[in-house]
Image 1 (cartoon, one colour):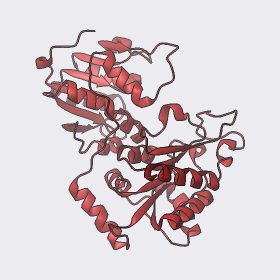
Image 2 (image 1 turned 60 degrees about the horizontal axis):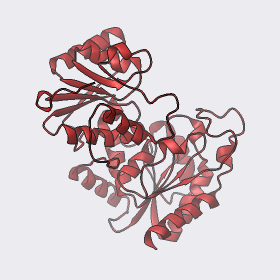
Image 3 (image 1 turned 45 degrees about the horizontal axis):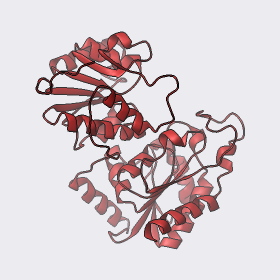
Length: 350
């Protein structure tokens, strides 16, 4: 389809995806929109957690929260959200998720140009449709979102995923760490043993603890354990195995605080997860452990990462829980991860 003339696109709505890691991978596409429409006001519509990722972000002017468990729950809630969007007089909506619901609300809001993937029975709700085709080649999710906006003629430079923190957030992290005896000159290793998607993506607490202890000793570093409130038990297990020689902040941070803390790390060991993508976007070197998920599509999009995985026949299965013996993860040893971490750092400094 032909895009409206530049000077007629004053307000753009970008419907964000629903997971933090996926949201990070959409930022290069959002950067292309920003570059192509420098004069436009860009608003991101996101759920409460993902909204934090963009509050603030240098390519986004405003953030609107879509609360499906609160004000925007059910049919009445969607109609309420559509009414809120209608008041904003958007000229264009770029719909990044593939769900029917994500296209329905901009249609109800009467946004005249609605661009997205023509899937999930929503083609009639869109004015411009993107299709990869049935035999699309293997590609990373970052490339998928770039291709989506490029399909509609929205061009921009290829950029890496990018996140932003404020100076105030950075200072707050330094103060928090200083209060725990971690100074600005200290090396910090982040340990992220959780994965929101499901238990199949999680490596084992005892192995995380062993890796953390060994590389912290090698680099004279301090250890910080990350995680959500639901992963606090896993983090506590690692803390106990490290005999308290770490800072455990699992379940104690907002998304913004988590971002600033990860940015402060000098290295990170992580499962395939949102914090993994946050680290990549901030240029933090990392070792990422992959099991049931497909690393070709969701690996950290950075040259400062090493992927640790075993090529077992049943992987990638993409299941939330393993129905057998979790061999894709049990096969990954602490020695494997330590060796990968040391090799990455040696390569970068060699």
